[in-house]
Image (tube, rainbow over all chains, first blue to last red):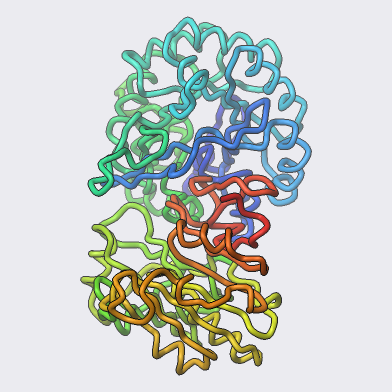
Length: 305
Length: 246
């Protein structure tokens, strides 16, 4: 029997598979399709202090081996999430959940995190400083080490739960941002969010998405994401959650060899709602093929240390 | 309720200009109501193709689609016997209980497709639907005879260039929209907006929006309605007249 369990910031997961924020809602809709308790955990839809409708449509553009989205953090706001979404989530998911938080000011991040800190089922706060689809806030906090550290400190001051900072790949030096988060007290980092991209419609000769550009994700970004996970693992001592284009059990293992303690899966869920269930199911056989007894042993092995 | 299954193509042939009829055989029980859609996975494309259900009968599902880009061109090249990964049971579908005795079904272009099963179901419930279909030109017209065979009380055809039926839009083919008990419509946005403006009677609109997942996860197809934000793929694609903001 192979061991798929891993530890993420002191919390044990049955396996490293985590549906990424924005591709899994608040879980309960997927729970109608299969028992989502087979997952390591999941990161729920990015939540902000106030309700947001998001960007105008079209919000989606297809690409070769991937897609662009410009949803723009549509969510009902943290109070509605706590009052309406979390009770529904709790009814179908019985493990700690990752709460994904976004904001437009340092105070807003802190306020939203403080409210979610009081929710028992929240096991980790994943703080998104990397959303490419909002014009102020979002990614701008993840652009410089100083502002990334500032958000980290503000959030750490209001919660005892592990804080994982979600990083943008749209920066010069992602390792420097990760180090700044670690120095400011972050318990982990997750990467990568989507890459800024765009498509133009040949018939209308205008950008496909109404917001002009959006975040590119899907299989195509896997090698770039993997390289960034590898670099960040070298740069920090805190756990790294790897994501970006993961679609097979082999991809999961590759991410872990690069240094990921756990692995998030995003766009693959949108193509196949059963993608994460199937990843969990196929992982043991793929581990055996590569003679891996315990997944937690292989984290960062590609670094040869 | 969503289901993911393998279907076999039994037919995939042109029925009008750039328009094909695809018949799929497989476990179709999740296809529960007219107005729902399915999503087809293609080897060559990342995202699935959302296609409205034109008809369902037992384990057979009929889809009508138009070649508008690379994905639908790939679909058109698929031979009978090919197997497809298909998500079924997507979307809410039309509410037949509100039809009254003489509903009007208005379809524009490809939008006539999801009205076919609706028409059959209404007839089987003893209703007398009238079908009005609008196209750009005679070569684009499909299914007018099928609607007649299905028992529609009348089938009114309009073409923009006047090469078949009444010259003009689908509304030009209908003498008095408000003489009917209710309406169901699917078609291009400007056509449906015109219907929304002219209709004193109640009705339902089937909307189209660019989708990511098609099953409610990505929020890619959200619209603002009078009762808040709604996902076209999940709470829709069919919305009641009073819910929509044009």
